[in-house]
Image 1 (cartoon, helix red, strand yellow):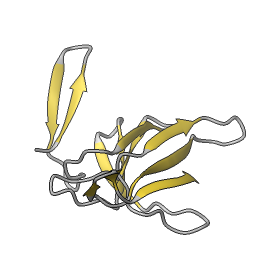
Image 2: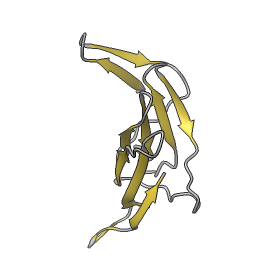
Image 3: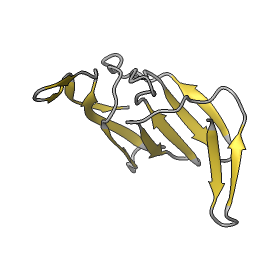
Image 4: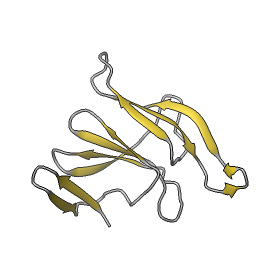
Length: 123
């Protein structure tokens, strides 16, 4: 368990022992941001609990920082298995992040998964 940093130039991986860091998860997204950072957005843990937290990883300092994610319209519902993209826009100093859909609850039904989301957010 934990975060690993891989350097393909020398085929070396390093276990990051720094705390805090995000818990293991599935159904998340990982997005490239400006300044050598990536954003880890939500997802679900191994107990199928939706994770309502996001993190950034700074490749220069090799550290994780937890984010507070909100919009001018309020907070997003916790979600997993969503789509996400980071988009550079010339009129902004950094990338915009867009999050679409996913699930906000995990309950298998005869017709599929319940609690599917159909919303679009810009962070």
